[in-house]
Image 1 (cartoon, rainbow, N blue to C red):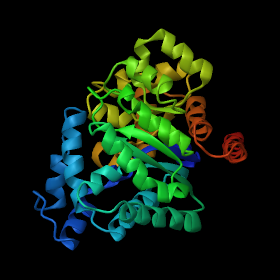
Image 2: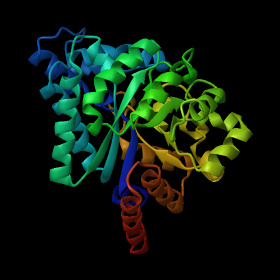
Image 3: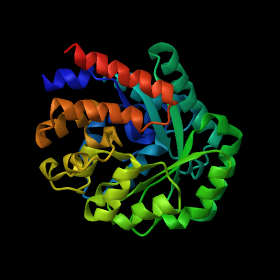
Length: 335
């Protein structure tokens, strides 16, 4: 019954790295198509390499895998495979992260990256009526200067980009490092989000809120250690885009039973469920819902709240949020 409800609920996905949807089969296919050497003889070997003990060990293979992405067709194929997959999970709206620095550092033009992604998003709108926004993420392990350069590269495509974000290695790269970049981005009209409080302490979340002026916190699970922060997040209803399977795979929590998602939900925070890098972490959005529901004993009402939160936390216009939430209400009234 729980599984049926999860599949029936319309959902938005707000924390998804498009490079993190590169399934082993597609990685192998693109490597062959583009004549890129990778240290794996088959998709099965790639799958065996997806064994991580922390965020950095994941990022090492994540960036290596991205090398197979060479042209707009590759970025289209990558994005379309993700959209086709989550359409089956009844996802109606996506807000997708992309990491241009991962590609421009390899000599791939910014335009090549964003054009392929945008073409797939447009196709999903036509074929699935799935709406979407793009979020440009700065790699926090790189310099402020490099982030400014990436922002300048993005400006000719600003009509395609809704917001800027901050991802990659968290420890040792606090949000304050990018305060000036985010200020400039907001002056250009971009909204802002940031990864904070995944592995790093709650102070990183405060920095993202106070210095980067973010509208959403990506991950944010370490807020559980700061009562004042929890009260603030609840009072302001600042969303957290939580990624359960990712947190377990990267050892943020030792088991799903230890995950703080339900505790944060019980405290009245605006929690959403997302898949982060599903090709690497073992599940797309419905699998994240299902695993959390089973291990945290989420009720039907809580699953409905999480689905509604996904639209409330989105950057959609208010009338579109209302339409999606009304559909959830109509669905649940009839079940």
